[in-house]
Length: 347
Ligand code: MRU
Image (cartoon, rainbow, N blue to C red; front, side, top):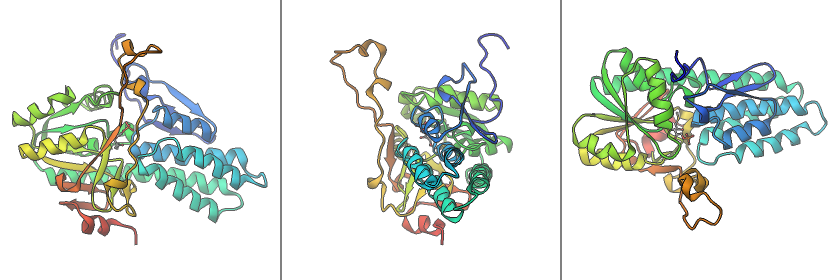
């Protein structure tokens, strides 16, 4: 490996030890493989807010471990539950759109309620189960998504919905991995995903390590790629799916879905059921995170007093009618709508 070769994706974006959570700093990838180690919930909340860890399922898993660290810090103080509740509020405030965060916190809250004494073993076991269940879900939806796609010449993906963004294997990249293993996929195109470049920095790097042929395109090249007839499917992940099948995902996903309709390209969303917000009527109710304009502005406009501003929404909502299928670990919904989503809701 020479100095210019990026380090390999050794293992995981999140590594739990008995007393700490190690978080791979995804902002430094692919140049550096650097882990930060956290021993309290405030640190984990900051790691999520600053996008060291990112991707809806990985955010949920990190938050679950954050709750374990909180309990370890505060139990057995008389008011340990109040202190953990305050830490959970900090975790909940870290990013607003990915519902996996709130789903994981709800699960951890219920476990706290059931274990008023000696909570740490139960909370640790639950966080580890949330982590391992996510990997199992990705493997299942990867196979299911590959069954639906069958043979394809090439697919386009957006952002990074891979091992880095999940417990492992990935959602959209899980489908792509399963297709590739079957020898059914000749080529993957990945949109660069401005402004954080999750596609350019993370997705093409992750795929290259599995020997999956990946070609980077500028986000603005997607329409022309579709017009060329080179792709049959777009495969993306999700941050929140409403009860009517509307899907929030990385900014630019909606544009891809509109373009797919125009060009007869099929559109797949791969997401675990932890990404569904079954109580949310439609995508209109999804809180779309807007991040600091400075993440978007070129360096030449960052001086104090610069008159140049920027608008930086980091997610958008794709209406259900533009989606061919939503694939989950529990089954796939074709032509998503209320009925299909409802069939996946917990009883
Ligand atoms: O802002 P990010 O990088 O956290 O956004 C990530 C995405 O939008 C992913 O597509 C989504 O979380 C699914 S990850 C399996």
